[in-house]
Image 1 (cartoon, rainbow, N blue to C red):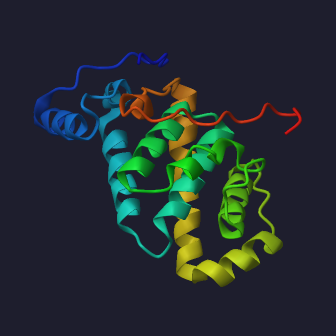
Image 2 (cartoon, rainbow, N blue to C red; image 1 turned 90 degrees about the vertical axis):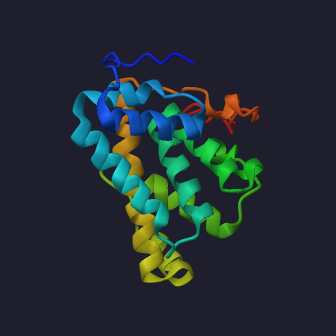
Length: 196
C-alpha cells in the first residue's frame, strides 16, 4: 500500500540500512515506506526503534492491556499506521483479535472487560491536550495494576503519543500490515458527534 507521506522516502543504505532491511523483511515481508521516510534522520529512527523494543521487553503490565492502550491512542490521534501495525502485532502476540479490531469503537463495543475499558479510557484521557486524567480513573488502575504496572502502562501511552503524532504529522499512513496477513479490517471509530 502506498502512503501519502509528506517527506519522500530516502534510499536505505549502508551497513545499518542492510540490517534494517533484513529485520523489516523478516518481520513484514518487505521494507515499510515509513522506514525510508524516517531514514532522513537516522538517530531519531534508531532512538524510537530502540525505545520501542525496550518497551516490549517490560513485563510489569499485561501485554494485552498495553497493546489495546497503544491502539486506543492511535485511533484517537488518527494514526492509521500505528493502528494497523499494532493490530498486526496483536496477531503475532496471540492476542484476542476480535477485541483488538474493536478498539477504535471500544465505548460502543461489548467485548471488553471492565479493566480493559478503564485502560482504554485512561489511554484516551492521557492523550488529550491537556490530559484529562482524574484521580477517579487512576485509583482502580493503581489497585489492579500496582504502581509499576501503572507506570509502565503510562510510559507505553506516552510512547504511543510520540509515534502516532509524529506519523500523523509526517503523513505516514497504514501500509496494509493486517491486510497482508488476511486479517479482517478494524472497526471504524464513530465520527465525533454521531450516535453510537
